[in-house]
Length: 621
Ligand code: BF8
Ligand code: SF4
Image 1 (cartoon, rainbow, N blue to C red):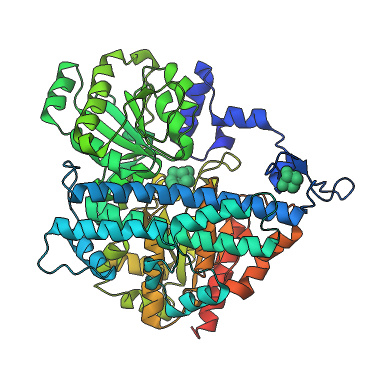
Image 2 (cartoon, rainbow, N blue to C red):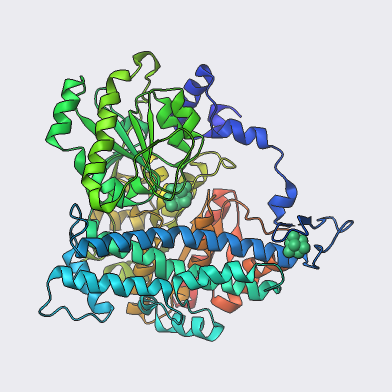
C-alpha cells in the first residue's frame, strides 16, 4: 500500500512517508504482515469456549459442520458475537463506574480536585432518580445520586432508570421481547454465562440477549458516563478549536492525552496552566505547554475546553513520529501496545495512568482521584523536563491544522433551536432537512483512513441530511473541514439554509463514543414531541470504519433503539446464514430496525437515504 492508499489525509500521508524514511513500523505495516487474514476468524466460525476445542466449521460444507460438543456455525457465530457485545458494553460501563466512583468521592470531600461544574444537570438528574434536593447541600444531593447510580450497575431487576427517557412505545416493545435491560453488570455477566460451554445454544435466543446487553450500555453505562461527566466537568456548549497533527507545537511542550476517561485528561488540561509548570517550561526553553488529544478523551476535552485534537485512532503512532511529543499520556481503550517500542525510537515518554491498563515500555504514574491534581502535575512536569531531549533533526510537524466548531450536546442543540426541537421538526416536515444521520465510530486499517467517514458524511449533507457525529468519525470530519459553519456550502440548499440561519455546521459534533447516549436523548426528544417511536423517525446510523468491540455493543443498542445502521466493515458473522439474515433482515420485524453492511460510503449513503425517504413517506411527509 502506498501512503495515498493508506489515508486520504495529507498530514497522515506525510507522517507515513517520514515513518518509511526512518524505517519505523506502523499499524499498516503490521496489517500487511497479517494478510491474508484467517478466514475462519473472519467468518466467526471458530470456537475456543472449552478445552475440547478449538473447533472450527468448514465454510464449504465438506469438513466438520459441528464443533465437538455439537455446536453448529449458527451457535458459534452467535456466541462469539455475544462475547463481543459483552466486552464492548463492559468497556463503556466500567468507564462509567469509575466516573460515578469519582463523583461519589467528590461528594464525600475525598476528591478535592474535582467539583460540580454542571449544577443544573446535578439537580435535573437527581430529580429523575427521585432524590429530593430540598434542604440539602449540593454535595449531599451528589452523594445520594452517586449511590443511586451505583445501584444501576448491580441491580437484579430492571428496567434501568434511564430507559424512561425512551418513548413509551419503545419501552413496551423491549418489555414484550423480554429485553428490557436490568442491572448493567448483570447483563454482561449473563453474556459470559450464556456463552460458556453447554448453556445458551439457540442463535436467536443468544442474539436477543445481545440486544439487551447493548441496551444496558446505551441506556445505562454510556448514558451514566455522559451524565456524570457533565455534572463533574460541565455540559458542553458550542466553541471553536483546531484538529489534526498540525496542532502540535514546534516550540511548546507537547503533551498528548489519549484514551477515554476525562477524569484524567481534565486534570492534565488544568495543570498545564499551573504557573509553576509554565515557569519550568520557560526555564527548559519552551514557549509554553500544549495539550492535545487523541481518540475519545481528546473529544471530551475538545467538547468542554476547546483543547485541540491531534488525531484519530489511526494517527496515534503518527503523533509520536512527528518527533515533537514530550509525553503520550494514556488511560484506557483504543491505545495500541505498539506505542511502547515506538516511543523508544523517539524522546517521547509513554506514561500509563490507569490501575487497569499498562503497556510495554511505559513509565507508570498511577492516577487516583484523591491526589488527582498532584499526579497530573507530576505527569506534566515529566513532559516539561523531557523538552530539552527533543531531537530537532527528527522533528517534522505537518502543517495541516483545521478549524472546527464543536460542543453540540443535546442541551446545546436544543438551545441553538430556541429551546425545543420544534424548529428542527418543522424543517424536517417542510423537507428542507430530509432527516438525521448519526455517523460514528472508529478507524480500521481495512479501510483507507477517513475515506469512509468523510465521503459518507459529505454525501449525506449534500442530500440535506443533518449529520450528528461522535468518536473518531467526528475527528475525521473535523480534519476534512466539515465541522465549521462554512461547510454548509457542501450541503444541499435546504440544509444549507438552516445552517446559515442558525450559524451551525451541517455536521454536529456531539462528543465521545459514550456520548452516543446524547444522540439517543436527542432522538427521544424528537420522537416524544412528535408522539412517535424512534423507529418512525427519518433517521439512520452508520459506522463506516468501525473496529472495536465497543462499536458492536453500540450497534446493538442503536438498532434496538429503532435506528437502521450501516456498517462499513464486515462483522465476523458471515459464517452463519441464520445470524446474518437475522441481523440484516429479521430484526426489522422484531425491533423495527436492522443492520446493513456496505464498505462503499457512497452506496452506504444511498441505503441511509432510502431508509430516510421510506420513513418520511410513512409519516406522510
Ligand atoms: O470510543 S471511535 S477507535 S477512540 S472505539 Fe476507539 Fe473507535 Fe475511536 Fe473512542 Ni470509540
Ligand atoms: Fe468446540 Fe463446543 Fe468446546 Fe466450542 S464449546 S470449543 S464448539 S466443543
